[in-house]
Length: 155
Image 1: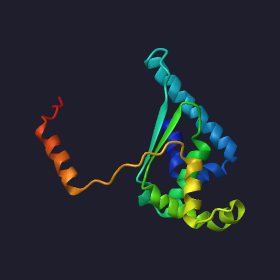
Image 2: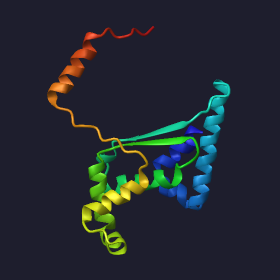
Image 3: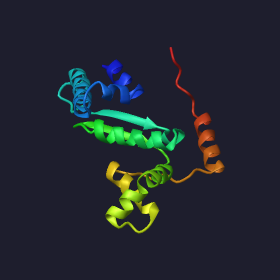
Image 4: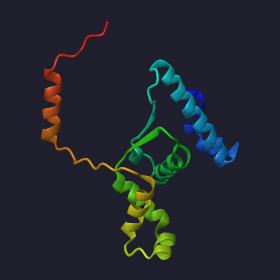
């Protein structure tokens, strides 16, 4: 199961080329349901969810990060599947603005180009949590607290 997901994540375009987008989405849905069934056998009658974390999107080239958001939206939207995107969304908004500015602005009458990126991401992301930036003092305090607590030992 993990090999199927891994090969799709590594090369989504080649995986999609082997079948239609709907077939790829259906196959991923079957994989997700298998994972949920396997988890249900372990925890009897519990409602199981598959949670997928996609981190550091802002480290990718802007077009690649935007493509990943679209792949997540189109292919991973299954029942009991939660996808968490961790990224600087301002950078993704800028990339979406650059990609869709002309077509979207003329079609919808959006007044400013930055609204295009915001509107696009709003369609893809259901819940958005903006975290405040950390300053050096906050990070130092958190590290000092973490180092003052005894660490569990491994056997």
